[in-house]
Length: 227
Image (tube, rainbow, N blue to C red; front, side):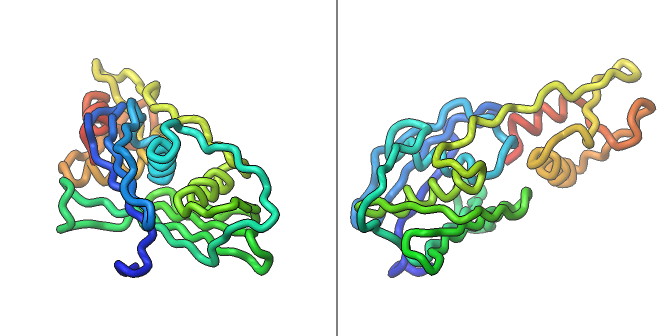
């Protein structure tokens, strides 16, 4: 990526950090400029791929709702040969210490306007779409990326339903409420393991389950504060 081939930029920052977080998002597109700021409200963190949050942000910036508009077939569709998107985490909003947490490619196949997409997530790994067709009269690269993600998820140009926060995971033991780590779904499980390591929180043993556990209060603190 260089300043000469960058097609757009999407900035996502916390407006409220919590288990259900609010995000302020700003999108720019080459040749169009900056869209009005938008807000992703009450989004359940650590419940889905980072790409889910990215695509909802794109939709809210461009169309002011978490949905993709309908597009009819065109006689001569506008197309892109190859599109790449990168998601980076900037700690506290600063470039120093940034890391790549997601990467996507959308490649046109031999037939014009026929694509295959590949989405990679730092925790959840890789998803590859089946071939899909997109033939707009004028191409928006953000629109193509969002449709590629939706198709990769469930072969439809509709965003999947919002993910749900995982909360009912506890067991009672010895007067304490514990959360077995094996009951925590990805990406929260890997995120929780990394957070525990960075905070030097050692897992607890249990007589009820064979795997390690964490106190419920610490699990809630992870959902509310871990970035």
